[in-house]
Image 1 (cartoon, rainbow, N blue to C red):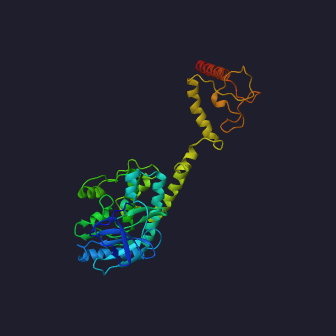
Image 2 (cartoon, rainbow, N blue to C red; image 1 turned 180 degrees about the vertical axis):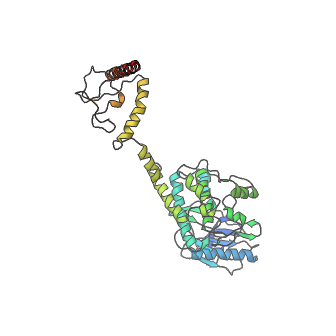
Image 3 (tube, helix red, strand yellow; image 1 turned 90 degrees about the horizontal axis):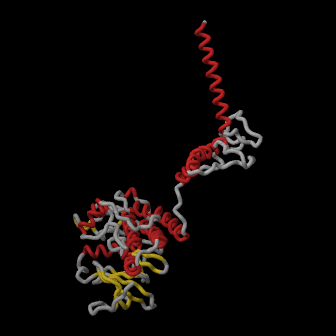
Amino acid sequence: MAMMRLRREDPRVVGSFRLHRRLGAGGMGVVYLGSDRRGQRVALKVIRPDLAEDQEFRSRFAREVSAARRIRGGCTARLVAADLEAERPWFATQYVPGPSLHDKVAEEGVLPASEVASVGAALAEGLVAVHEAGVVHRDLKPSNILLSPKGPRIIDFGIAWATGASTLTHVGTAVGSPGFLAPEQVRGVAVTPATDVFALGATLAYAATADSPFGHGGSEVMLYRVVHEEPHLHGVPDSLAPLLSACLAKDPEERPSTLQLSMRLKEIAAREAQGLPEARPPAQRERIEADRPTSRHPERMERTERMERPERLERGERPERRTGGSSGSRPQQPRNSRPQGRQGTRPGARTTSGGRRPANPRLLRQRIIVFFVVTLIVALGIAAAQQL
């Protein structure tokens, strides 16, 4: 994470913490790198002076602290201390070393599919803990994800809200970051865990393409696209595209749950790391196996052979002959070239001493002779009947 020197107007001490560097600034305040008397490093957020008197911002700040206290697990930075009654309210969390996902992609380029899936699986698992605490983050995006050596961490719960709450602070004003907001946030309806799933899908698409799935533009343009247009996932690896598309569904009910998302992303991460192809669904595998000729399906083999042999004959290839014949024997009829006893052989068919069916010319001559004899007998019978 980029650090900057303290400015003249920045405090040097807040509570029991000494401040050393600026880590960043946002709409609510400034985040500093600080340490306590034991040397433990913290990320300390202080509300801006011009907002400290605004009760709405104080309420939002209090919600962030409340959300941080309720969440358990290693997915977020642990809350260390807070003072909501101070002249400039502040709170401190455990410092998470490492760049944000946004900075990493901006500086080093897109992440490989295996890393996108691995980061996504950890974030989805973290969101399970967030949602179990009854909290919806509402502003999940690449800049709010830190890539620490121990795994990704979700930060900035400044606009987090209880599950089922509205997304609006004022009528017609959506809270969040355009391009990563869910359609229900734009419409102003109740938020649910599926709201964070949408944002996570957009965030992982950014990690894989270095771009928002809804492109660029003004806030109004971006919000319109989120609600009315399908996301652009060109450049997303094939192994991830279907899952991210499901996360970005307009209807919250059609998105996977955070638990389902975590399990699926873990599977993709493991397969991508080993270089294995996408596993086929069981139904698709059964259809492929049923259509594949094998020795267990002799009828299918016979049908396939009959279809392939005329093509080989047109190319001038000689049909294969079974063992047991002399080198000078004539080519056999393709459909009768299988050994005796195989399925598809007609009962009572004559065979040669070598186990083969009669050659084509001989069989043809016999049939012609029989045809003429029968025709002659019928003609004589008709003539005799007419003389009577």
